[in-house]
Structures are given as C-alpha cells and as structure tokens.
Length: 276
Image 1 (spheres, rainbow, N blue to C red):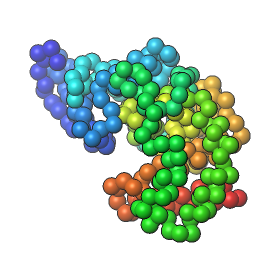
Image 2: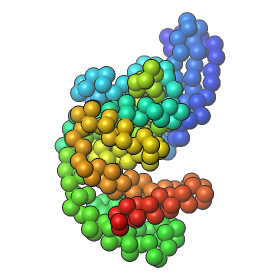
Image 3: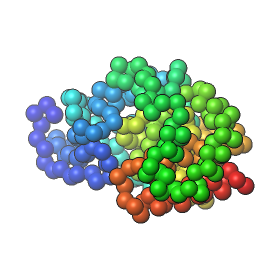
Image 4: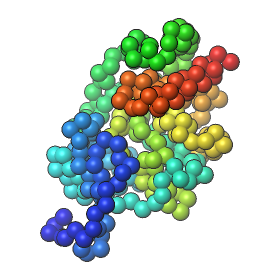
C-alpha cells in the first residue's frame, strides 16, 4: 500500500470462499485485503471487470467497494461502512431497489462473465434441474416420493421458466443479507461478486426472499417496483422456481446434514406452493 504501515488487522469471518482481512493503516485509512482461494469462482481481474461494467452502466446506483489495487490472487478494497442487512431486515426494500437497478444492465446471453468481459456458457448443460434430480445424493435426500412430483412441476412450468430467462441481465448470484451493507437506511455496499453472471434477476430475488422473514416480503416487492422493475403478479412463483436450483445445489455440497435437512424442508414448501 505505497509503503504505508499496517497498525492493526482483523479477519472478517463472514467470507465463505476467500480470506478477508480488515487493515488499519498508519495514515488512518481502513482497507479490506482479500486473499483469493484457489477454489474460488472469481478472480481480482474478473471482479474488476464486473465493477467497471456496473460503473459504466448505472454509475453508483448499486454501490460496491472500490478496488484500490490487485494482483493475480489478491486485491485491496476501500472499506465500506455499514451494518449487514441480516441485522437490519427492515431495510429489505432498499436491497430490492438495488436488484432492480442491476436489471438495467442488459446482457446478450446467459452465462459466466469472464475476465475479458465475454460471456461463456455455463458448464452444466441445458437441463440443470434434470441433471440435479438424477444426482445420487439429491435422490438420497429427497427420496423416491418427491422426485416424480418435482419433475411434474418442472414440466408444467416449462413456459414460465423459458420466459424467466428471455432477457438476461447482470445477476449478483449470492444476494444474501450477509452480503449487503446498510448505512443510514440505504444500501452502502453490495459485497462479494464472486458468483456474478449474466442471468435472471429472479435468482437474486429468490435469495433475498429465502433469507428474509415473510413479514418483509411485501416491502421487497415494493422496492423492486420503486427501482423500476416491472413486477408480474406471479413474481414470487418465478423467484421460487429459480431458487429451487440453489436448494438442489446445496444438497450436493459439503454443507452439514442439518443444513441439508433445512433445504429439504424448503423443497417441501416449494412443492406446496406449486401444487396449491
């Protein structure tokens, strides 16, 4: 950092894939140093490309920490002020407005945004749901009674799923209340763009709904509308369809069995939503 000394450091424990360290510098500035894991989905160059895309498209409408410097496997960011939305869910409306702003960044096709700014197709093929439902670990967790019910729901929802993916836009990919900072009632920063891609905003909407109490869901809908997103009557069903893919992914992850049981409970709620 330009020869400046580090006077204090503190590891930030909320990061899942990379190591994040808060640094106090000798001149009084506070920064965040990120050390990228070899298994991380992203890289400093890719995150900078996404930050530049946001800045050139919508300016500071969705604030993200400025990258001050980076190498191949590390980066230093401005330290963003605020409290996690997780502890202030009453500001979920402001978070939903940020999702709506991201939908203004239209992209040509669905896929992974590369370091060069190109969009590469995802490597899981055209039928993600089908491949996940055939996965042994998923079948073991869901049991034989749920698989045909879920398959039927997906067949019945083919048209809606096609419509959802018709206009890709920049999608954060992990729009969780632990990745959103709130300061003075507004979003001060959206963190951790590791999973950002060209996709559907219903992934971010579904993630926010899943991790926010139902008493805040009406405010999320209002925030989406206020941010300029055209909200259809079936928006919660659309979000649930996309969020279902996350539940399936978690069932094949290294997360604990207790956590996976909660995903099965969410899948049961998904079945009830579409069978009623």
